[in-house]
Every structure is written in C-alpha cells, then in structure tokens.
Image (cartoon, rainbow, N blue to C red; front, top):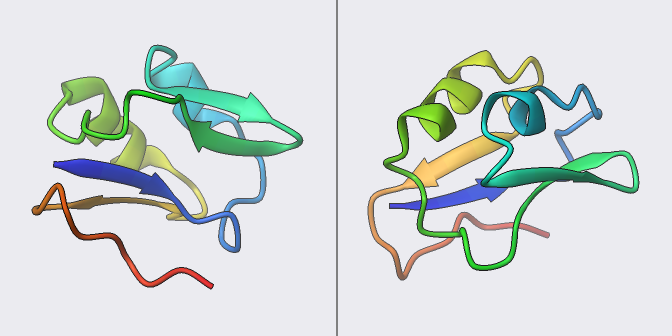
Amino acid sequence: MKVFVDRDLCYGSAECAHRAPAVFEFVDGFGVVRPGHEQAGEDPEVLEAVEKCPSQAISVTESPHSAPDLP
C-alpha cells in the first residue's frame, strides 16, 4: 500500500513525523514521505499517523501503482 501527504491539506502539525519518524519527515513546514518509504502504507505507525493527522492530509492507497489525483 502506498502512502501520500497532500501538501494542499497539510498545515504542518508534524504529527506524522512524530508518530512514524522512519517514514515521514518535516520539510519546509510540511510533512513529507521520506524517499524510499512510499510503500509503507501497511506499517502500523503509518496507519496511526493517518488516523491522527489533524488536517487529514495523509492517504493510503490499495494499489502501489495508483496515486491520488494531486494538483
């Protein structure tokens, strides 16, 4: 499963980086998925970060080849 952070929704709480620091980092005021960790969508810490993200900016997709429509 693939994980994404929508920068249009993220307002920089850093909850993702706090809950799953191996997968997320905080860059330029936004949470981002660390390079090479895009397929970490089944990680329990990632799922917790998705649930606890106050801006609901994190999404996980079933297919590793599909991405949400981002601008």
